[in-house]
Length: 366
Ligand code: NAP
Image (cartoon, rainbow, N blue to C red):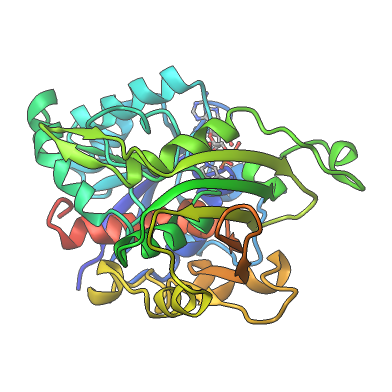
């Protein structure tokens, strides 16, 4: 099969490098276009990341030879699309929100679908925020989005904040099994790679925990409600529940966001055994479609009383699975657990690639 040529915007950054590495031997997609800031533009990719490549996996020699485009200049991507080397782009740009929103709109208007990691469009009412196992049906707003904006081939789909899959996927599995969840308190312990390269200063992080990440608590509290919400009249309407209260902390871990969760059910309350059964059996559309990036088991239960841990569990099932443990009753709410997922893979590039696979399977990317 001829692979679909893809572009990566922000290809030199933390998330962009993960896209490049994960797409090395992807069965459907091949990186043929890379773009970043004017600082990197005009250099070969291997020169632009020289001394700042962060991953154990290398990029392929052919990607190393690609000349980095200026992501602000959509005409370069348009030319690449015309030449057959950019059917859609993954966006991993770190810029001002308004700039990213305008830029992603320009790519979509130029007929280039955008699958984004940036938060800029997460609250746009016709843009789906996809966790492929949770709300794959939200992709079906794309025809309405295209119609409203006058786009023919282009569209924008985004993925949520990097920490929320560690609790939103287990919460969704319980809701899908028929259990209402009223309230939820989550305390996250988030890795430094979540702040991009070079991240927080080492002197702030070594021997320390920082109990503040700008904007993160709002995202952790509100994004799950859009993901659990519905499409009404071509726009998203948030779910009313669960009410979420989040405490977000930056901790001296390289990769892997951990979430300690307490939740309260509605009138029907499952037993601990039932919760474990629901999570162990949970499968969704990506597993049914056998998508290449999909974890075989989206939620992995750790029975040891000291797991999950970032170093031991973040790479579970291609770093795409959510690991949960310490599943036990809560003295104030009903249930407590610890969830963990890899922030730059499941929470960023891997999640974006899985979304692209889903969108291709649904016929939105060709
Ligand atoms: P990063 O390491 O700082 O990388 C930023 C990228 O954006 C680089 O390629 C950079 O190019 C490019 N860029 C910066 N300024 C630009 C400009 N003015 N014009 C064009 N390109 C510009 O950031 P990151 O952690 O990879 O994050 C990328 C995006 O993903 C952000 O929106 C972030 O919020 C989101 N995200 C991150 C994570 C995570 O775990 N890190 C998870 C989920 C979502 P140069 O190299 O040329 O400067």
